[in-house]
Image (cartoon, rainbow, N blue to C red; front, side, top):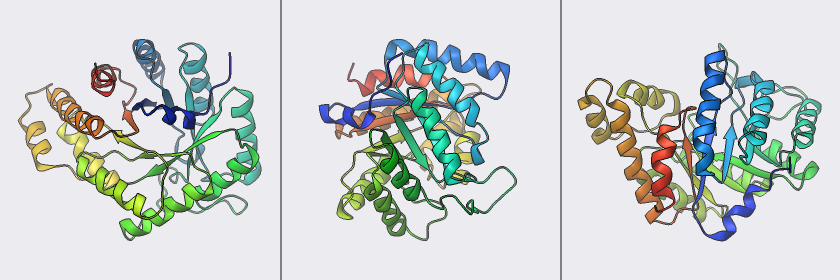
Length: 291
């Protein structure tokens, strides 16, 4: 199959770039779920799909395997995630060579999180400590690759301030990242303020808004604890008032309002964290594409 194209080129059209995120399955049922979802989403023809890379590279082989399946069977432009945590420079080079041989031409370059049970980030002594170092390595050795990086509208949990975090993002952009994909947020004002501060700091790359439709109040509160994402009181009220089984509907309605506001403001792209489920993407794609 023909190799993927550089995703960075898609922003030149001025249309809202629409993308979804998958994660590699860990079980047989999970494998069936991701394939069922991909089949349902094939008709939507998202501009690209990303696939995550487990903490410490724990899903490296499945990231490659399912990335290939999503590309070859369903025709998606694929952007595999790649984290530098735990890998030496030689290991990173070998992984990138495999991605290139597999026909991938885009990478979501991340520092990554420690494996389960570890709380502190300790880089490989012969590896990279920060995402900007990984991005610089990719840009130097694979100049044709499109490179995405992560941005945090409400700051990374480890950053002392949003300004410090944006300075870190500037280093990633300067190292060669083509675009930024944000962490999920539930209040659009955080995104707009973040973009404004990024532009003031000299970051001119497209900043894609990351949206996750909450499936329940419990899930939303878990994300708040894990990612430090603010959950608006109005959304908490809607999720709390939802009847049994209707939490996902309330969360989807909230996400639809977010997407409508983002699209109306002319954002360059919207990235849906779909948790390997098709329903939210099927509904929200209509708004993203103005149908």
